[in-house]
Length: 284
Image (cartoon, rainbow, N blue to C red; front, side, top):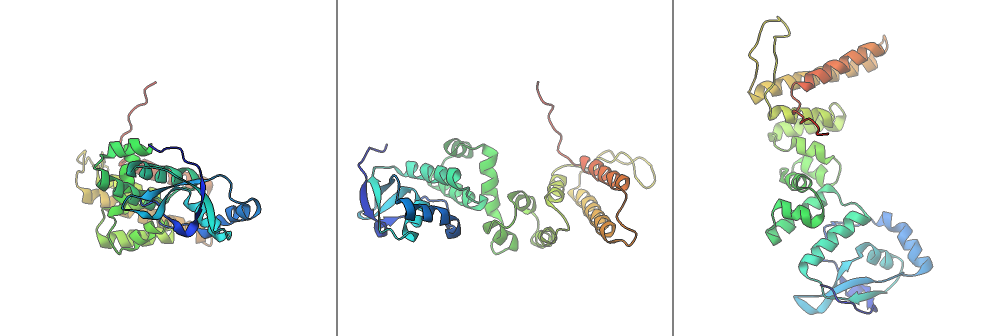
């Protein structure tokens, strides 16, 4: 539990980052308004820091306010007001995370790295971590899962750079390396989108129901349980729809009529409905 302490001027050079700081980098460009404000009005308020438990005579560890420290440095300040307080490691972890979530959203990768470290160092369950950071279990699990992307893969690099949505990264997570790279390339080119990837992911976890053969109208088995069947159907569906969109946009005779576009969209929705996860009815 922190105790009240009177702020005192501390050399910025004597401050070190919170060891549990989840943010991997600070975008200096986005600090410009804060830098100008400090130049005009000076440093308003104060920050907190604690003595390093492993080196009490060394640098002070910032509890919160890393962006303000960096902005003060850019504004030309050499000292800022700091209240030196006692903070436990658990408090340092939670404050660091809450500060970044509330002030400037962390990337999902930065969130995942922080949560993974928290899990290893505390031994908390996913539910306990969610309680501590004020998030649902699924929110925590998704960010931990995305860290499993293969080392050195283009998809992992894009996730670390926040250049691909977490939804798309998760949809591609468990694919074989070659297929993952191929679909990620198509995603980058705009040939498919995150909805296509989500549909494919659902198909890998659910059987496909086709009551009749669309070519002959004859009865078929009610359930195809093979993931390969589902994958085959989706591949052909998304390829066909990609070609339809491309040729409709570039054909000499002009775009498809609105009624035709509506019908194609309805067909696609109907086909995807075959593999959608069943939804529980809402309770009034």
